[in-house]
Length: 187
Image 1 (cartoon, rainbow, N blue to C red):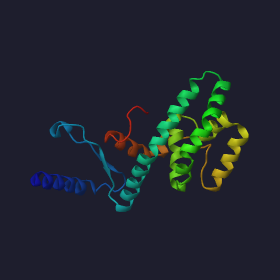
Image 2: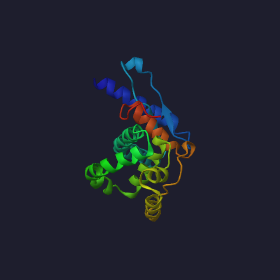
Image 3: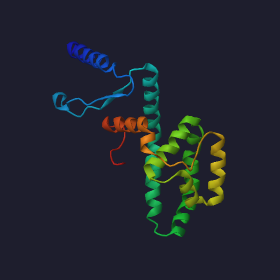
Image 4: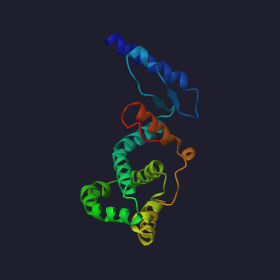
């Protein structure tokens, strides 16, 4: 067992040294999982310790915030199943108090970076900007109010999610899905 651990550690060290020459982009390694009897996650690492730390923090944040995204997608599907705009608004009104009681404290305790990431993840997973979602569910005045408050903290609820501008986030989500930490159903 110790020999396998040493061999694995040497393999990781060798891969790290071999990839250290590429100083611009992260490295991704896909290992043949048949040798190890199952699916192994993709490992992404950077040549710079600071970049690696930031990437790992991004992965941790996404892993922590993703359950909220899954709940939001589920609620969006239930709301859209109501059929009409009036039915959707009634559904929102009926469930708003319960959701506020359940999630308000947790979401208020998020720091600014977590909030910005949550906005990006919601935009990514729903295909709509948060501003549009709020406008659809709560009205134009509330959407404007939330946009104004968000701007004070560096949020832009109108900003659409652009995949090419968020490649680290895409890679982190891919790595987490490959590792089995996130559901594979989302895009």
